[in-house]
Length: 147
Image 1 (cartoon, rainbow, N blue to C red):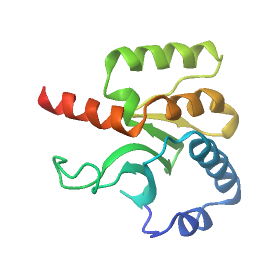
Image 2 (image 1 turned 30 degrees about the vertical axis):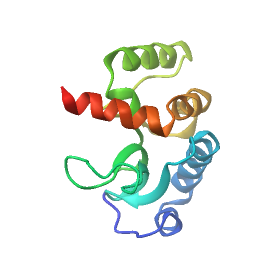
Image 3 (image 1 turned 90 degrees about the vertical axis):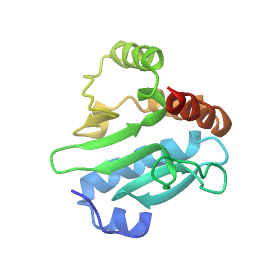
Image 4 (image 1 turned 135 degrees about the vertical axis):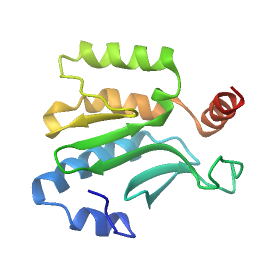
């Protein structure tokens, strides 16, 4: 369900009440833990947390590099964690920590899917968001691109 909203407020307003509450709570967790320098915008039809092009303009597609995102899809909601899923060791550590919470892990290519807020370990999501500062994330992106 790609949104055509141009602002985060518009995006939240178009969601059903239950999803609006869940997405807003996860958003607050992200914002409370987001390292300095990342920007919150609507991009790719979802709430995105990205590296401004003024900081890192040399992306493969000339669009800002996404660090994380939050979306309401047709059958689920999702938190996209690019910083986790670009590094296999970090992904394995994150997924093990997730399982230790006792919550069911439902992952896609770069996201964690959840149907209701109680399905998501918010503390782990917050820790994960706060783990990589902007400079470290950009350096990792460059390393991945270099091959």
